[in-house]
Amino acid sequence: MADLPLHESNDFESSDFEAAADRGFIAKFSPAVVSAADSKVIWDGESAAFLEQECPGSAHPSLWRQARLSARQGLYEVTDGVYQVRGFDLSNMSIVEGDSGVIIIDPLISTECAAAALRLYRTHRGARPVTGVIYTHPHVDHFGGVRGVTGGGVPILAPAGFLRNVAREHLHAWSATARRSVYLYGQALERSPDGQIGPGLGKARSTSLIAPTAEVERTGQEKTVDGVRIVFQLAQAPPELTLYLPGHRALCLGENATRNPHNLLPLRDAKALARQLDETVALFAAELDVAFASHHWPTWGGPEIARFLSRQRDLHSYLHDQTLRLMNKGLTGAEIAEAMRVPPELEQVWHAHGYHGPVGHSVKAIYQHYLGWFDGNPAHLWEHPPRESAIRYVECLGGGAAVVAFARRYLKENDLRFAAQLLNHAVFADEGNKEARDLLAEVYTRLGHGAENATWRNLYLTGALELSDGVVPAATERAAPGLVAALGVDQILDSIAIRIDGPRAWNESLSIDWHLTDLGERYRTTLSNGALIQHADPPEGPVDLTLRLTKAQLLGLLAGRGVERVEREGDIGVLRRLVAVLDHPIPDFAIVTA
Image (cartoon, rainbow, N blue to C red; front, side, top):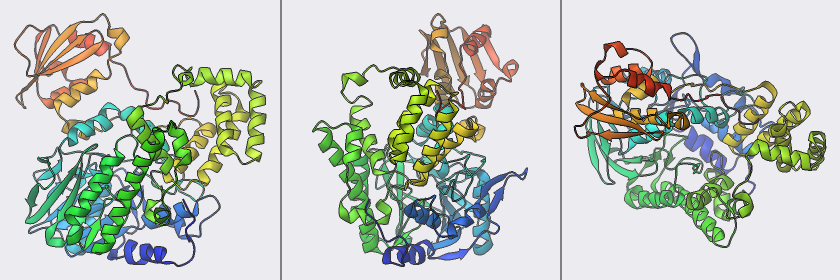
């Protein structure tokens, strides 16, 4: 990206700090600390106070500016009858006043933060009841705090496919995503000029989920909730909503367009996103006074909103098309990422800078979307896994000491990228090579301090921390019970299927019918050739075991309790045989060591 005037008072900075990020400010939450019932701190907004200082040498000035803007917290008026609570979590909670209460859009990650945000609103706007909830999409920072604002009994709207995607990300892949989130969000890093400056999650959280009462299935679909007319635009992959509020001339963008480009890996199609943003401009821009999102701060004025959305559209479309152009000239994802340059007009726009999804990251995601992991070079088709490759590389280079010596030379030449590659081989070949670990930690620290991208900074600095201090456990070690309880039975049974240890189950053959008496649903699971196959509403036929139980009892069985209270026919030993071939995830697997 081109250099921007980061320090002087210019139009960009004045617009963001005064006319946008601080516009509509009503009150702060003070002290800005949210705690659980046991006094454990969930969110500490006070820890961001250091961002008011001048940017230090340990941070990229552009990222410092973005973090400083994003750390602002409190209650804000977006427009008449529409409010946001910002700085209470990774996302914003938006509040729309209706005839008798309020509609909550995206109730944050944790119940404690969502409850605190609602208390701040009520302190200044009155004790209006919650009369509806909208989840814009299935990321946990947009639904996890729902039980902090309501116990249910109100309309809860979400895009079609919402629960299926929640299950995929937060149940089926929970161990891997939780572990990697330690790196992505810098959960173990101290909030400081040398450590995590954003975006970051809280130290702990109580995640919840209430299943939607209705889904939005198409663009143009309308709903009226508590007297508020809402027109929806629906996107897919993942399912995501844009909400137009005609009575307020306001548009909620969810996270379809925020003050930075999207991180396209692993979920988003860049071209589809660009087309969606173009549709957003065509459908709504001429009627808008304000557009707000579930991250960052709003944009006011129809022409400015159209310009903002059009630039976001152009950026994602450009990255997609140019990646394909160069891909069809024979360049690999890594080569395209290195060659990609953004148009000059977009280089001069703050929100086009890669604070969350850098250009090179997005290019590789687009390449992967079309061609997968293989770049076509046969040498890369059947490489040894990382540790075995590292042992051989280190041997070829003359041993661990020689690799460290080469790395020091590249470090002296400020080639941090190749120094990291060399040292990574040295560490993977011999985890006990302290000199290599310490030097790699230094390299990662320097790379992190120079990164404009917040998540890259967190990834580098967490890698350095783990090389020095060992593995940092994930903040969430298992899928939240409240989240699992809201999912469908088919999704819960899928979570059993992905835990089958295939080789151990090769010679097992069994079948179980699950009759959910409270839901009136019936499923059959059949274990065959190491795969657990699921059938909904199966035809009558012999099975090894039939269980008649409620959904709550099913969840109890998965937790290892209550089998004696379940009505059954057949051989209960079949259930024990199934449990015997279940594997257990490793939530704290190594990342920067073999």
